[in-house]
Length: 415
Image: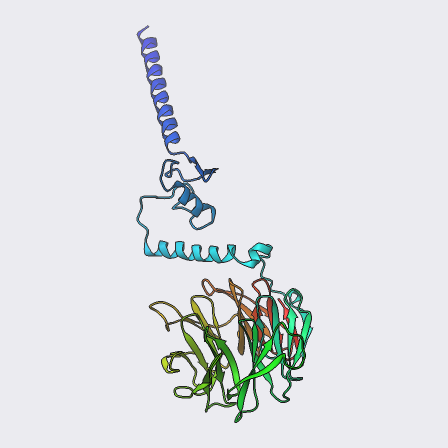
């Protein structure tokens, strides 16, 4: 009897221990389970066991998780009370920046998330006669044609020609183009030793006499043009490796041309705060005082910088003869600092640049291709052939498609 009594006592004790363990685990799992809260009227469940719905930042953490800005410290924990290292902070900020760009782009609206790496994605949209650069006015594209002294207006949806404006002065060689205040301004080259010209096109007037005006003379061989809100600026390469300048043309006053500090400028760009000049003959990018034309800063880049692009934070420079692209911080305390020199990804005689809000496209004039890079972190994406002897010269974007001028084929590609 005593043996049986002892056995029953042990069994009762073990059962009691088991019940205590089960209850403890149940209470613990209840305390550490993922919680559900209400955010802006919606029921949201987080996988993080350390973020209860009573946390004052529950909805902010939920938003960061849902949009992909954070994945937590593990699959089930967020670590709300842990300090954030500078490494983690960089990850948060870069994800936030990238997500904001992607979600607010026209490609997101159209649900066109892809980036093709096949040239069948390139379709010829229009034919030209010696095309120059290309600009978008928010509705249509504009392309100068040196072969027949015209400027053509194209529909952005499919590249169909809408109008063609004949320049009334032969031999002007229209080259670069910009949309300003309802007008289209075009640079014209008359030869290395002859002053260039800026034309103004009345965009709402059909191609009749008076629709195109000889707006102003500028420096010799104006290869680039920009606008700072009050003044047009041209980069004048003078047709050679020396003797270049930049010209400032107020919309209602006379020109000023500046030669000091310049060798052979190929492009000029206003980023909203700074005036930048690509000096092809000096392998430099110059930051210029728009009030005086004085060079404030000279930055060494690759060989033969050809074109400039601003992505909202950084300046991109295509270096034609060194087969690379320089990325320079254009804003803040690091303004003028070279962030990276991009190589590879098919870069070969890089010339034109375009930005669609998310990606930067580079035309490879010597390599007969285009290269795409992610603007947020400079990651190389794809390189796509534009066909043999196509000489892709320039590019532009409407936020949905890239449009590429092929000088060798005398046409415009949609990508």
